[in-house]
Amino acid sequence: METQVEVRFLSAGIGRVLRKFFRSGSGKMAFVGAVILIVFLLAALFADQIAPYDPTVRSGRTFQPPSSKHIFGTDNLGRDMFSRVLHGAKIALLIAFMAVLIAAAIGIPLGLLSGYIGGPLDRILTLIMDAVYSFPGLILAIAVAAVLGTGVTNIAVSIAVVYAPTYFRVIRNQVASIKSELYVEAARAIGARNWTILFRYVLPNVLPSVVVVLSMNLADAIMTEAGLSFLGLGIAPPTPDWGYDLSNGQRFILMNDWWMIMFPGLAIIVLVLGFSLFSEGLNEYLNPNVGERE
Amino acid sequence: MTLLKVENLVKHFPVRINFVKALFTRERKKVHAVNGVSFEIEEGQTLGLVGESGSGKTTTGRLILKLEEPTAGRIFFAGKEITSLGAEEMRRLRREMQIIFQDPLASLNPYMRIGEAVRHPLVIHSIGENKRRQREMVIEMLERVNLRPAEEFYNRFPRQISGGQRQRVVIARALITRPKFVVADEAVAMLDVSVRSQLLKLMMDLKHEFNLTYLFITHDLATTKYICDRIAVMYLGRIVEEGSFKDIYTDPKHPYTRALISAVPEPDPKAGEKKKKLIPAGEVPNPIDPPSGCPFHPRCPYAKEVCKTAPPKLKELESGRRVACYLYS
Image: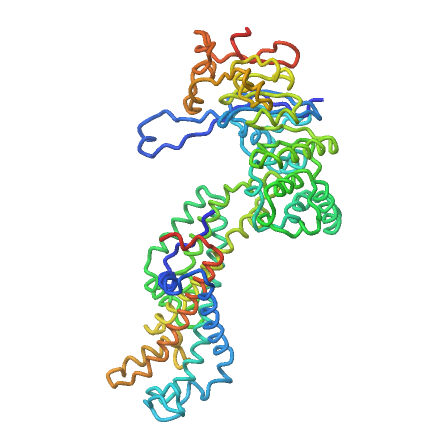
């Protein structure tokens, strides 16, 4: 059975490069990724305790380069960048997890039904999902965010709209192939109802690829969220947010104030890398034939 | 008493053709998988359905269990017609009729523990008062099919046991609801020879113990020797000969059956030398475009003009002995 996950996530491309770098198969990737994720999760959970200053109020002079008092420097309003990056992790992860949950909650059930029932329903759902899928991700998210407005939930929903078709496609295609497996027929032969077959025989067999899509999706959701905030469609200031800090910082780049964009940017890169490593490692573990596709 | 009766069963599968062709041709091609099959099985008997691959024997088995909707024909089970039964009624009837597939690994859900796989039919048909009682029944059944220690096997996954053990699990799953009728579709074909005879013996023991009726589908005449009371030989979707095991084996009538019997390897090499092999020339014709008349006539050494005109009827030569060949009419 083919369970490899072919999706258009940016992080999938990152993962392929990483796999070459790590010479694959060692489980190191998943480990390094997991370590990064744990660090970020802890930073987000204990941001209030770790952060030396309040991220939304002035804590020193403006435009201070990194020093022992402000290890990431201060921004144009004199706010501590280190505290902002820490608190930014909370927002980034919160929105990413919400977006992924919403996307999965839409895409997985629809994919299951569409693949299992087939026929006209399948054709219509596939058509709709393909139409959504054909938009460039960020553009679609901007359109939805512009309609819904700012705020954590709205941003999460607009990101979810972009990624729901990915779940749908992965699940639908897998279900369509699993449907003709002998064990599904055997389940029918022992008298199982369709619902029972769907949940006890089909779903467990598509779950491994769902897990991989989930973790890849988290990486992309973080990038999309940062992109939206960068464009001013994300979280309303003064809430600390990496994307917003990036766009705020780039206005002063000509003054050589590199720290204002370097640290939020690095945070995004490292977190996305963490998710990519983790998902690619997971993919390798759960779907061992993936490496053979090149 | 007749447990299963099949009348003139037909199954045609449409052949997919590309869209442009479909626009311009009116003719829709069909695979004639099963082409008017009739037989009866007495309660407690075993009918062997023999034929080479593509003869429609597997489809016949699937049609009987309504895993496939027949194109035409009627199926009676325990005196009741089940052909037009609704989905829910059929679902409940599945407790009585079960199937054992050829590939035990493929017919077990890889993410379901063996015990749960065997227990699931009990859950579906609400047999056993509670989970504990069901578990006991499963353990008992696993022990009956010689998966010991049963408690240990209960928690294993299909990939963690051997092929022969998997087929035992499949048998346990099929028999846990105490069905009356079991279709064994090439049930031992994928196992190695040593395991094969053990499983055939197990199936025979279980047959007597649970008073089962088997439809034993196989391409291998040698295995029918141990298990079948009667044999029906299929060729290109039709039954060409039917009779008791002994009649078919010692006195095959139809030219195709003769060829099949002659191909069974003889354990004694000297006897094997003496035996003349009658391998029919050519290949099995394409079931999309079956030959006119008798399906076997292009390969038959005794073919006459009449064989090309219409398929011969299955004629009763003596009681319980039917042949579809113009040589006997």
